[in-house]
Length: 302
Image (cartoon, rainbow, N blue to C red):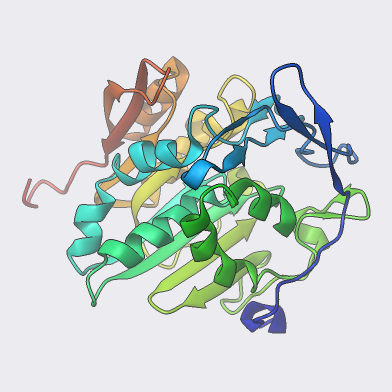
């Protein structure tokens, strides 16, 4: 296993520096463009209120012409859509082992906020495995920048980011892909970073989810999915019917999913895969979104 996995020192992965420029309405964070190998953080599309009067920068991926989280309140979106949408507080309190999987690690906000909520509500016997797919990992400093407006979430992230392998993210103006970096690998799976902290294990799968999900990378069936790729209109590959079929195949009976979108082809793909799909009120300005579950076995309790 790469020694960086257990490192207690924050890693400096270099890359283009952040500078500020004035937008018409509010300061905008500008990041020097990088080569067309990943979702260059070109401009932060505004900012939102954080905790204690702090501001939260909303990162933008030029490759997908989309922000990494809601312009209204990214952390509130995580809580409403993914944590509440999958009834995680209730499940953490049960004391059971829970396996969450995610399409689109991005800034890490979903993971770090889930860890924070797990620490607050998890029973002493509870364990959490979190498997997330990411083709274009971000730099440590970009993740820290986007979390800085939520000090308690950033505090939950610090210990994990200290273990980040050197080389993930943008190096010397180039967006590193999974095959370019040495990663933590204690489960004999290519291009997977595994970090453990107490009862929580993060398994960050680096590469294209469409091909990586077909391999034997899951340690157990998935109990809850965070479907959080970029907009289906901008990144349809991460919402394809074929990929949703793989998501279903790796989901435990009774396992759940939740997502911020209500796009028709996403709903149809989830239903075709076998999920029971519900339309529920969306977060902030979104009218609707989707959540649902894999049906339980016929002889299982409802």
